[in-house]
Image (cartoon, rainbow, N blue to C red; front, side, top):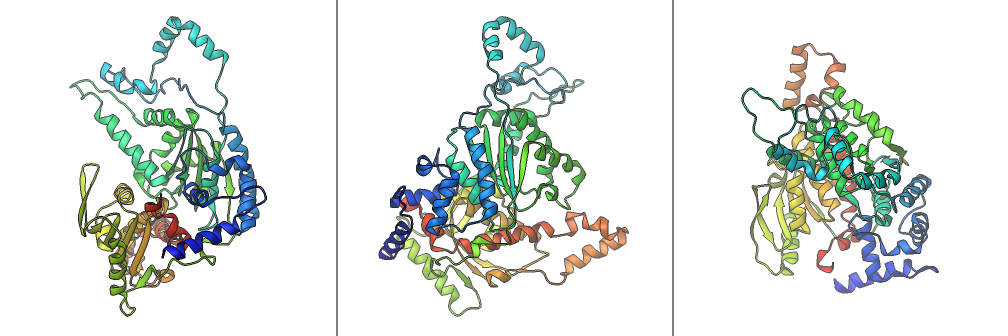
Length: 498
């Protein structure tokens, strides 16, 4: 295996020999880390030219294929990169919005929100009189106007994430953050909950209205001036109802957003419950982000790439179960651990995985996707394990919405964190989702619609009775699983070499 790895690496190095520079094996490994968003500040090759120059080298080496739409998008991102080098949104000294506090907060609340400079206009005037010289200096040096961000959308496998991560690796501004959108919203809800917990208890006969969303936006803005989101997708009504206010706050605080998505802005949260409350967010997003369409009709993840061996098994194949057992035993043999259950602590909850060894987890589909787990749980699994075997993956039917959604979130998280995956499933990968006739449960839903007297148009707007989002997202899952079986992905996810 070591000899095979050396051969593969040598071939890559030969292909990446250029007149301008010669990349070592270590730098080639850094390529995968940075393109997946793990470079700490900027990539080591950033000194050899801009984004377009680096893209040309990757095309010449055969690592990428020339794509006109990708090149146009990179030209725009390169312009933003130049602006972001010296850009800052600090200090953040915005007045409190009228809808944030409807009565004067107690001293306890002031202490809890002081770090995000939540000050009333009266307090600001008082401070200006005391610190006139300082304020005058700040007035003479106004902050630059925030540049527009980018919202890059297109079909699966068109290179959206690759372009965004290349851009991120070249940005030399240290106040940047690259995050999967699911993980970001999980963090937002956690911050909101923490801020609500810090509020003083209500007193009888006195009501204090407090909205924590804008303060949370300011808190995030103090930590970063550039947010790069992968897979901007809204499927949760709890996210949908706060996005407008949250992003208005981020944009007012000077945060620049670069995001990728499978959907154009107008189709976000399509068919979602209470979508009318979400629609104003689309206008906010388009006002502050240029929209880039990357639809090329090509899924680059399905192009011919060297496989990492057999990593996707079908349960009906002879000895498939034994082959997966052998795979686990071979991986576990290299670990300095014994095979045992592992209990993970996620936000005060315990998540038990029944069979693990070191950084290897041998899981079943019910264990991961039929329990009430979410993005936070999957992120913790990704932190603890670099290789996960998933057994008993079913042949998905349209009615299996909850399981399909969890499986999609699971694979998105693992792909984002470069977790290596081996699967034992009931159907081939390209036929994993069955969009056949309605199940008994779906037929009952259809009967309920008829009894309620809803029109077809009205019923189609109810996410409760449709699986459009799940089917759409599952296409991305299939595409990503295809890439996750390649030698390139498998080697780049080997944390023992990091």
